[in-house]
Image 1 (cartoon, rainbow, N blue to C red):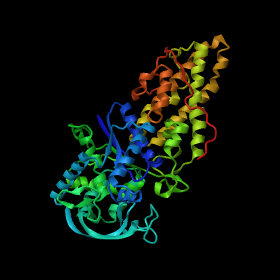
Image 2: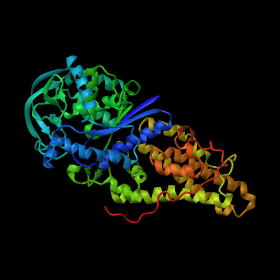
Image 3: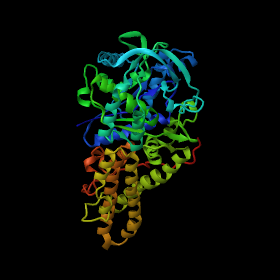
Image 4: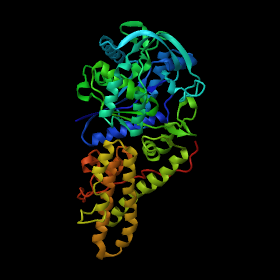
Length: 506
């Protein structure tokens, strides 16, 4: 089976921040889990390099758009390594291969009769690169996202016949109640459609930085009509001389933030319908990471640098925190203090210290050999059905819910240590069987939990699985079931997975 997951592609008019990392890590967690299930995964992220926001930023820096994107795009690609993301392809929309495919698509849509020429006038946000409808305009004709005055624009444009897809889109939503997740985002997108669709400006004649219309080179496409097609072009251009779209299209899931839901849940499927192409299977729309009550954004100046966070806490801690602190799909507040608390209490104490204590006791009491599987440990009922419930939650893209369930098991293992008190059992030779069962239960619980946790904290789980003699199992979700381990393996050394940190300032 094949599985194709994408992130939004990111504007390169500024350096990457944690908001970018959030979407990318979310998609990576999904990709890693699906690989554990044996799926043939294609995971794409990249940069959105055309449009007026790039032109404005380049002018402010006294450089050309091309020079600026060539300088900034590698920073976004480097971020994927910093946060330990396993993408299969990084797409740049200024690549000639992408632009050629975009022109091919729009020529087909034009030839299918869904494009015409006209005059457009409306309120426009240069940062969103979007004309706003009446219900999207804030107080005093401002952008509700960027809090800046909107521009009144009028220019000759080519139009995309979005209105022609009013009924097909309504049917799409009616027939596919989980096409947009979570449900409140589905309702938001459907409300926009039900409010009545108008044809939208496809091109601009006032700027030249963009993909030229193949039938009218005096116009360039609005950035969205170029950028959205990265999902379509990526499988075609990722491997030179090989078209992967037969295997990976339609996309399995698009991951994005809520500010771009209109483009993805309305414009994008309409474009594909106009092309006559299959639609993506679904999309997941997450909320904002908030600091001081505002969306994290370079333009708002309230950015938490993910590179700095990784330097202090490590990439696994950042990945864990993003989905533990904020329920994936909703808005949520974050802070450096929040990182510290989750790191010290949950990662360092409840998981890392559990691993260190368990391995130390196996070394001390059983010469570093995990006892053989006993008849019963007392943990079986706690872990029953865990693999199935985890898979079900992942199928609904409930990434934070998965972590909630896993952490109940981590805490159960910690209580198990205190209840069984291996240090007391070791003093009574008549209770050697109980000690064996306890130590096996701890090793087996850690093995099971670590396979489940691997998509979130891959570096730490790989280290722990190697230390308990199960390194080859970490990528196999079918083995994430308590009791499948036979015991008898030798354990190795394990440095502290999450060393305690002193207070860290922003």
